[in-house]
Length: 138
Length: 138
DNA sequence: CATAATGTCTCTAGCGACTAGAGGTTCAAG
DNA sequence: CTTGAACCTCTAGTCGCTAGAGACATTATG
Ligand SMILES: [Zn+2]
Ligand SMILES: [Zn+2]
Ligand SMILES: [Zn+2]
Ligand SMILES: [Zn+2]
Image (cartoon, each protein chain N blue to C red):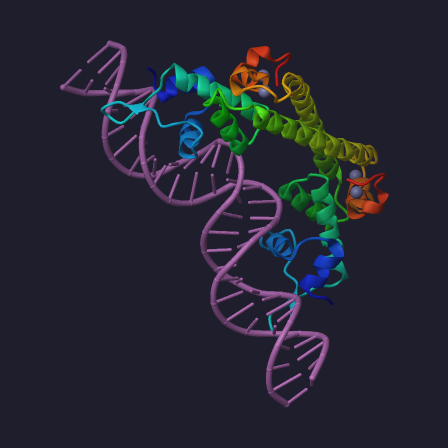
């Protein structure tokens, strides 16, 4: 049995975030002391570690909710879990593709000016004003 | 002189977004008709195109504000503009690095289960519960 | 010229995932 | 028993929009 601060230290999740997870239903409300303070057990710790790991991997709160729901029913098919993970992977890949396109254009833009000149002739500003100068879509 | 709807059509920026840009000071308030409706000119169109392009490249509203400020003073040094663009590039690259690490782990995780089994034995769920299974930091 | 349809106005609230702060209570150490 | 850190709830702010309500303006058609 440990306090919210202790749980925070062990999971590296900030105290207000833990309370936030409780209000949105990701964490079930733990026991309280007589003085109304939260006390967590090993199960609470594990659950929060799960949440933190999934958040670090970019899963949404909603997705994590579904995953936890599944975890709580060991006999159910895990199809939903693999679907969620696959969706997350393709999401990440889409983001990478987009960012790579941005990187390309930003590289061209930053290379075009050394910052020694004056705003009027700046390639950075000119490029931003005209998408036609871009090599690809983004 | 054209309406906000016309401006929206020409720039592909939604009407409420245009109004939002005005409230946060990105767009200067345009003239109004007698009936209080906004009327834009060519300069307004150019400015909004600039904003949209910069937003598409991931610049923050604040960064765009600075860039526009600079654009309005053609005689100033453009150092700030190149700094902002360089910062944006390194930001994008940091995001790419992070997402690539996520992609790696998510690939491992999704490969580990075909979704045919049961929640209890699911590699997706097990992996999320234990960061030790991850090959790298993320 | 009257009406109807579409466009526009302001204002407020909501999204996701927190984060910060105020003002008050409880706990643990000395 | 006192002190100070940790805890409590509640509200509001972050970013960049987006959606909706209810009212007014403009434009197209008959
Ligand atoms: Zn320059
Ligand atoms: Zn472009
Ligand atoms: Zn599985
Ligand atoms: Zn991990």
